[in-house]
Length: 271
Image (cartoon, rainbow, N blue to C red; front, side, top):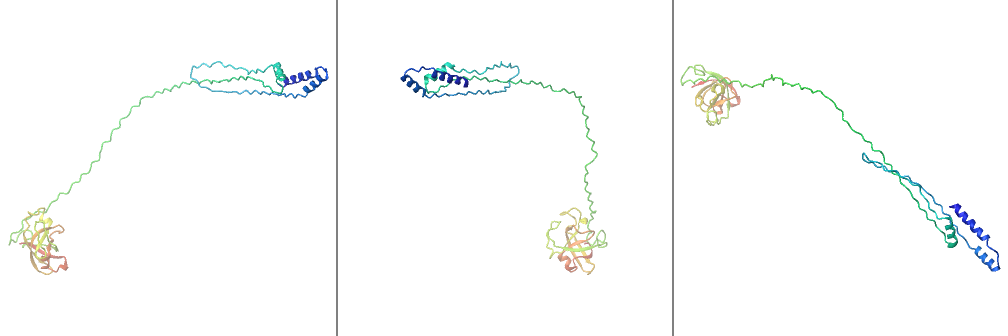
């Protein structure tokens, strides 16, 4: 572009020098044209090629299209046309039109195809060995309650009898205590402060309660320490009395000894 402009400038200078020198008017007109200012515009065109790469993933069997590229072409106006524009247009700058043609290349990467083949393994069947449950040799202990063997019941000696257990001929001996009498095992309710009643040892009376043969019988008690004697009626069982110990009401115990003693020894028998 710079070389073309230089050629145009030279042509203009040659045209000015080549004009004829005629009359004064002509020279005067020539001098006026020589004062005309000519503007020369230089156009610099730069071309930049931009490479564009596009990756497109396609499926298997895809055929890539043919890639065509073209070189950018520039179509400037001819030198003659530019010169004519300079003379005809006067001070008006001219512009040249250019057409830029670019091409874009598309790169299609190959698609990798892989086939997975699972490994084949052969395993011999393993026969499971049955596990037999061990025979249970332990036995659940069974609690066997001890058989209760009550003392052999003896019929109370008849009145005035001198034979048998706890009779006048063979009296029983043991401790005597006192308790607050009330509803007894024989089903009778008594007032121990005024009634002389007694509770016999539970082993002697046995398992019967209301129908016990000893209920309602009377006994004679002699205190060993004081020698005093009293009688009492059987109305209850003494669960804490062992052997031939007996439990008296307050009224019966006071006739033998002081309540402050609490416990003393005596002999007794059935009447």
